[in-house]
Amino acid sequence: MELAYGHPKSLKPIQTKYCPGCGHGVIHRIICEVIDELGLQEKSIITNPVGCSIWADLYFDIDSVQPAHGRTPAAATGVKRVRPDHLVICYQGDGDLAAIGTAEIVHAANRGEKFTTIFVNNAIYGMTGGQMAPTTLVGQKATTAPYGRDPGEAGMGYPIRVLEMLSTLQGTRYLARGAVNNAANIRKTKQYIKKAFEAQMKGIGFTMVEVLSQCPTNWSMDPTESVEWLEKNMIPFYQLGEVKNTLEAPASAEKEGAK
Amino acid sequence: MAEEKRLMKGNEAIGEAAVRAGCTAYFGYPITPQNELTAYMARHMIDHKRTFIQAESEVSAINMVFGASAAGARAMTSSSSPGVSLKQEGISYACGADLPCVIVNVARSGPGLGGISPGQGDYFQATRGGGHGDYFHIVLAPKSVQEAADLTYTAFDLADTWRMPVLILADGMIGQMMEGVVLPEPRDPAKLPEKPWAAGGQYKTHRPINHVSSINLVPDELEAKVHERFKRYDQIKRKEVRFEEVNTDKADLILVAYGTSSRVCLGAQQMAKSQGIELGIFRPISLWPFPYDRISELAAKGKRFLVVEMSMGQMIQDVQLAAAGKAPISFYGRCGGNIPTEEAVLAEARRLLGK
Image 1 (tube, chains in turn cyan, blue):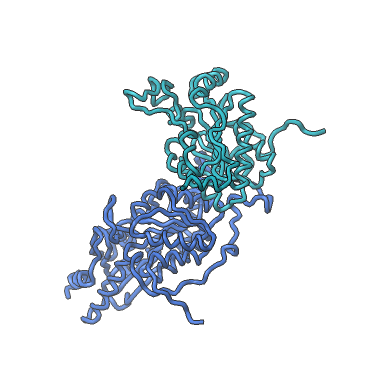
Image 2 (tube, rainbow over the protein chains, first blue to last red):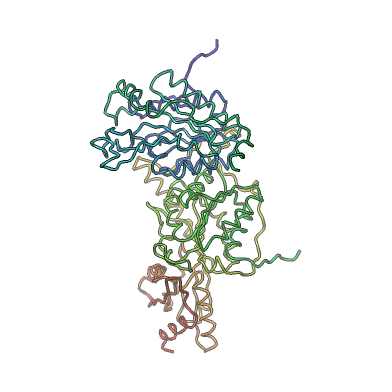
């Protein structure tokens, strides 16, 4: 009989340290399902960031490289240039990618580095205990925004829509935003990841999938409330879908833009 | 075949030696006075179909080195003092993850933006583990274009052997001046030693997965890892000490200097000789591991030392540690991008000798 559903081979069969209701476990799983479907377990390398998902190397049954905070895209650049035939997954959280590592992600994207960034956006710092992230919504509370994020008087800035910002760069070829708050969105997110990985293996250009994810612990909610909060608050601001898809565009079309 | 000798700038000779050593990935960011090195690597790495990236920052460049080295490349970056400060985070991580790489500092004067003229004020940063945490790495200081090429070539092998970054501490004078250089034999990157610990290539051998990482949150485990690394440091201190001596048997006063200032000392020593005065020269080539034992022996023989640096005095502290109070130690230095003159060094030596 054919196995219809099982534990992905590329994901170790162990319990994670992630909090109950955290999205990282689901995201790890769908990434590993895609790695298995593409038959790339022994040809994949993950660069795991500083943040909660620094633990990714405990759970992914593939080679890993752990760089400094925010420098993940620079290190992934080094890895992919040396191992161009491998699937290189640059896994980053919102602090790593959109705060301390802003220069690294912008320039890796602009060079059209041929790895895939998985950007987990839960609108908060997890590992360090609930500080305001660059993607924290206006009014959302954090330990460093105790009265809510206030772009006005307190000068806390506005949440950054990373994909939309990167979409102007010619090196980016596939930018999609999914979520893991319900089964339908999880399935769609997996499709985005698969499309990005396939594009990477064809050497097309920079690919990135942002995944809206819940952090019940630092949002001070139970897991059920957190998926509802994500749907009501994050999805209206960070709209789901493919923000940019020029995978089919011939390379000459990209050159046109340079004229 | 006649030996090929080329007239090259130090920066270019370092670049050519790196290419010949089998450097497969170079990442750099523009900064004076090392720009010819990045430009040289751009042309020659691309010609050899190897990796060259002009990074968006020094920080990114060292982290690209981190990734490339983790994936098994012979990786290199170069910069000058302010840029090397920015790389210190990455160097700490590379030391914590036991990653080999070569970093070149064509040093200038500081602190801060300082100037673009040669300096030796980065000695402490280079030799004391300039980033956070408990670590050291090999530091080599060339005195000429020839030695800059030779030490760069050797640095890649040392980095792989000891699994650590190796820093070439040159200065703006070494980087900018032109001299004749005989270049080492090119090595085929395909025939370099295997790196079974690196990420990637698992499909070829089906080995267990590899993690390249500096993190460990279990204090006893992290302590054991640091102890293991320090045992390696002890071996390096026994095997990799490099220095040069001139006339140290005859002279009572020994000039201690590295890099450009050692060349000034050599001039002063020759001038002294023509005036009937014997001076010795002790030139550390490996600044870490530092040649403590030999300086200690010389101190025990009753020698005295004049340390000459292009700084307010940094290496002098290592000479003091080595001599351990057994010998008088004096200092002469210039800073701000100035280079001591042979006449000034000789005058200081004559003053100390009362001649």
